[in-house]
Image 1 (tube, rainbow, N blue to C red):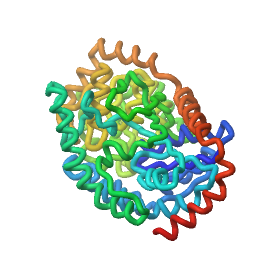
Image 2 (image 1 turned 135 degrees about the vertical axis):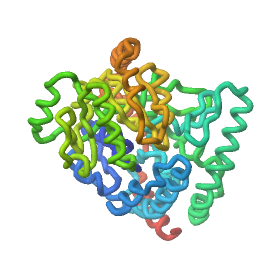
Image 3 (image 1 turned 90 degrees about the vertical axis):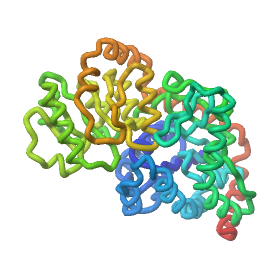
Length: 435
């Protein structure tokens, strides 16, 4: 079987799908991994066929746009970047799919959903975090729009419907429905709330204890657990880092992930916090920070696999990305989360509900204070809870095998895939002529 995986977004979106794809190829499937050229090297090191989508310049222009990380402007900025890639991705998929192809795609890979609908190419939607499931029973947390759970359920339903139709459809609808018209498809509504979820199958790459399934989620959702893939394991030896981690006390790790921030302000605040608490720290930071002459209690690196670093750390201060939060839960260490945009607010609330961390009092602000971190470090209940939750986290390979079984079961519902090869070739010709 040819599984064509489409990964949209930053490392936090791409790496979980890389982990899943490694398991798929290890079990004999033919995998094509489509993502930004930024991730070419890591994709090929995973033994996967790399298919480029866009350019490195496109990627960095999007992620380095401050509006992408501003809660008030992030949605429209994100959509602008995503919409520009729909038609190029349609062309790309036309040249790649055949009668033996199954699509496995991030929900923002709208071209995959369009081909799924138009030509019956089977699709599994891969949900990285639970915030994209629009539930009135357990409303997701967003900076600009959060439905209070204390409101009566019918009111929550109405507000969610209004947000889906009145805000998201107004942003996404014109571009999606224009492309649908070229494919002979009718206009649609509830694009983000309903349509993006594949009717064949949806995999939530997180466990049920992190996000309890709700009856108003899509009916065909299966939760697998965290893939816990965080990069290339073939790191060069770093004797200085190893010696630093061997020393006491254990360091506190700081990272804003891919979020565009004022680096200097963020890490000056982090250094001041460490000094106030008498702690040591590891900064996962840009070149402008890693090349600085830092005090002896701080070590900076551009990248260290969190699965190697966090089990030897005391706590983690981060942006709330789902992959980063999952690694901290697996390491059993407390988290201080400073969310900036997108799903980060929802992830922060879920970590706090678990009792494994706190959210900074000024979300989206680089000038957090040392007080919540001090509370985190001194709380016996949080420390104990982190250890308890750590025992719930299954190995990443277990999650990937669960996903594998769902994907393989889906292929059995399309028994004549080999015979459909000629039809697949016809789809390519037809799609090109319609575009």
